[in-house]
Image (cartoon, rainbow over all chains, first blue to last red; front, top):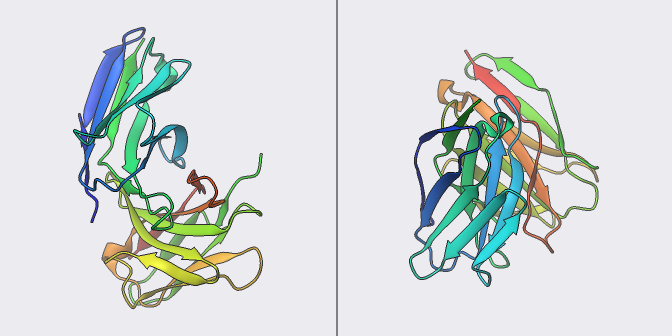
Length: 114
Length: 113
């Protein structure tokens, strides 16, 4: 089955800096890669996603890049703010063939210091 | 904006007891999921449900677990005989199927004593 590895496990940055979180996946058939933000005690919230037919997607300060050949994808947050502090999870799934089961990475605790 | 809801928010039970966790998915969604998250760990897939039957389940989802959609709105997860290691946050999620975006509920924290 699919295995998703996520690094780093913790990331500490100063406000205004950029943050990058990286994930690798094992199943070359995976074609949908969402990123979720989870604040303490709250539900995971989708912040951005990318499909395998696209190499990069951007939404304001957040961007995701995908390298299908290398089977890795990354989350980039620019101009970080203290409210970006949370746990970020990457995930992978095979959209269209397996009812969309998400396989999650281990999570990255992002701390943005004011 | 419509949201997935779950009840209860926190359930405490004794080992060996049965629990039922309830979810109300978003009304026009067709695919339903249960995930669990042990404290401090990643979110793990348990089961997916479509067209009134299980479409996929993980190794975690053994004979002690079952899911049901008893009516047009609720989606339940039953654990027949809880074990200490079942203590976790259980998230329900739903999606339309035309988009793979899954919307998560707020979770039920299950504590087995």
